[in-house]
Amino acid sequence: MNHPEWQDALDAYVSGQLDATAQDALSEHLKDCASCREEADALARIVSDAAALPRSIEPPPHVWWRLANALGTTSEDEPASTKVVGSLGSRFRFALAAAALVAVFGAATLIVPRHHDSTGGTSARAPSSENQPDVMVISDRAKPQPSDWARMIWALEEESLSTEKAVFAGLAGHVDAEALARASVVEPALDALDIAINETVDALRQEPQNPGLARALTGYYERKLELLRVAARLASGTWA
Amino acid sequence: MVSGRAPVLELEEKELITGLRSGDERALEGLYRLHAGRVYALGLRLTADPSRAEEIVQDVFLQVWRRIGSFEGRSRFSTWLYRLAVNRSLDTLRAGAGGRREQPEPEAVERAAPDNGLEMTMDLESAIATLPEGARVVFVLHDVEGYRHEEIARLNGIAPGTSKAQLFRARRLLRARLGRRKP
Image (cartoon, rainbow over the protein chains, first blue to last red):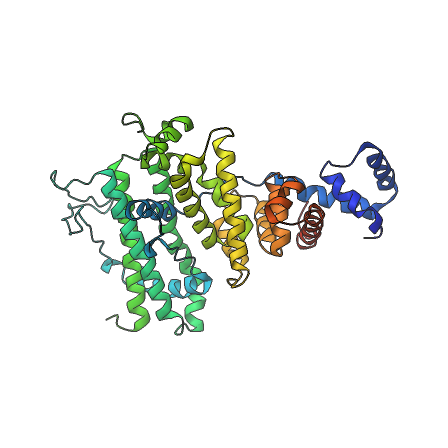
């Protein structure tokens, strides 16, 4: 910054807020001053990049489920259950990933999704081949309606988040260097579930009445939940 | 009520607002699908905290649900909504001034931002998140959202000159932090 007297003008210049006279003066200066020219170019790039940032970033899907729950349970105060658990931080993710390494590669066959009916009970699951997604058998009498699916999905996600929190508390003091080193290998596997969840939520936005998508979403959440439980058992040393 | 069984995404905003006035939750969902991304982006950039941004989205749409009666339709609904979002975000920052949460790692903001394949975008998002709060708020409102200094000053309870000074500071800090970017 060799010419501080021009700095305010540079700011107005890159914002397009400099009057014609001042702009002419600055333009003359920029012809002869490489450092101010470089400064102007850099500032102009920041301004144009900022203006080009995406105006919309989709919030995580649980934000809507919590909002819907809040609307259904209260009209004034936000219930405790709608408080955002929040991101748990990279340390937890790494610790969880380390525990999940064994879960994914050593105990995958033990991850058996549970399925709930609309009343919170457990329903039977139809036989499925290895190449076909699991299909929940739902009697006509118990067939969930869209609002039921929303509640089921929200409940599963709540349980998943609270389990993550519990696992975090359990792992926080027990993560060794070796586990952390393994984390980078497993992190994508955990992220894959979240990606599948987000993509299914996006599809549900397009087809909110599609029960197949709702079933798939509950299945993904249940798998994530089971994985978290396995991780918790591994961390606590209770895995047989 | 929202008419028939049409998916909420197919309804016009005007119909959704009418539905909302009559207490139809599906109308709120439709408006959420239309505008939550913008509210979240605003909250995320102003607070640099994904958890706070989620709370802001929830609170803003709860306000929309409860206060739709105060929307007189003189301005666009989106203008009214984003003003609620800005005010809620600034309230969050003011409330946090006395018991500030731990500043999130830049990684947390990167993870919350969309993966659009542009390293430039991610770098700028991360750099914005590291700005001091006052500079960040003014930069986001002015250079990202397009507010004028006079309006930013009114919203923040500061002088327009202070807003300009904060913008000056923010741009120089960003320039220093983005200095190694490829052209």
